Length: 170
Image 1: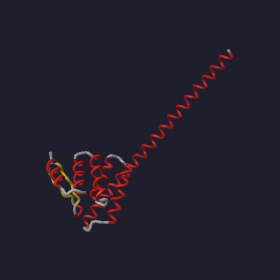
Image 2: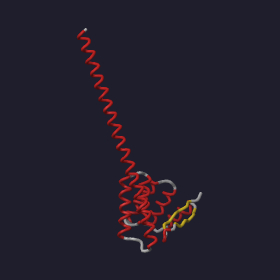
Image 3: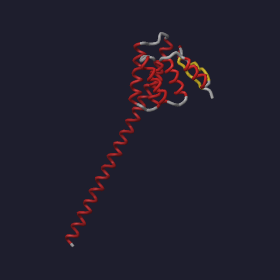
Image 4: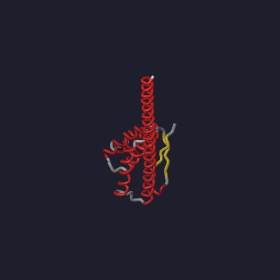
């Protein structure tokens, strides 16, 4: 099994590097301690389908380098994948802010990062809208259930009163 890693590079092109999971892990462990190690771990966990682990790794790296675009991307991506809307909003906002405050020097790389950040933010907004729609539907369902329960209770009370009236009249 081989991992395929995508890296954003100058000019908006995507470079692909293929390596085995073992080679990738050895590269991670050989990396200098710090944010780079956490970034490599987050990338490996993302590509292995473990967004929760990737988010934890990205957060660890962000404690060491809070303005690392790559770590912010990994954190935002994992939070969106996990549908952790509050975390996704925080990381998307931080990524956008870092791109404004500390933009990449290369114009092509800057454009690529803005494109990636905009797409992440768009996906985050879609998830927020979806969550809001589900919340509204749940509210309507609860209202219908409550109304139905009240109607049934009212019907039972009326039926009981009718029978009580009939017993007294009879």
